[in-house]
Length: 259
Image (cartoon, rainbow, N blue to C red; front, top):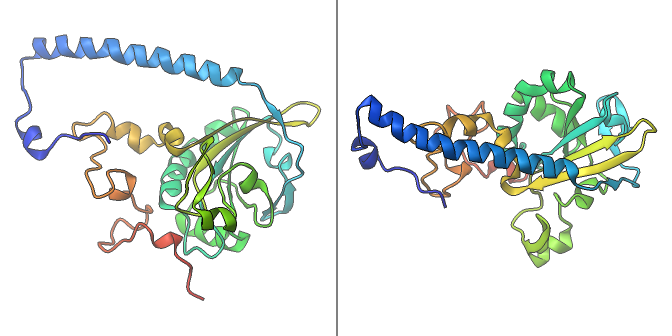
């Protein structure tokens, strides 16, 4: 658990002259540069990972009719998929996934002009996806994997038997599960022959650096300020059109929609 400063510590935070501040700042800069170099090293190792050829003919429901995984590349060689938690019958899409997509939205035009296609994938029906997408005002391509094994093969959805048992293969190991869906990112490459390869997937906190709001908050005195009761994102994050609601329930989207 990350420890955040208390209101008392903020009010009594050390205050020094500019030259003393500069000494402390330069010491921190050394650590920041080391962190940057480590990130560059990890990114290189990620690119060096071996690939897995995708043999399954996955089919997705889209506003323009059925499409295969290869079709989703939309003329580009790299496909970035946001596994968006949204099961059939839910009232809305996941709040946390929405938080991530809010950031991806602003980057779409840049990614699309740099050989990367971004697509959100959920098990919800296309009608459910389209309604929520319109509500949120997003333009990211968002397709339904309803009836496909895609979500299960990439370990972001779990079968009824796994849910009943309370354990499943999640984040690269067997562990307890609390929901039928989890969030994640998967990346694919398509070569000139049209072959598709799975290059990378990440889950849990693996997509945090995609969230521009978090990156901004990490630079502020209060940080992310997630101080309870969850000590995580549910403490404060809302769908971007729900911040004016005092009685917002973070778990509401995951409850069945009323008929």
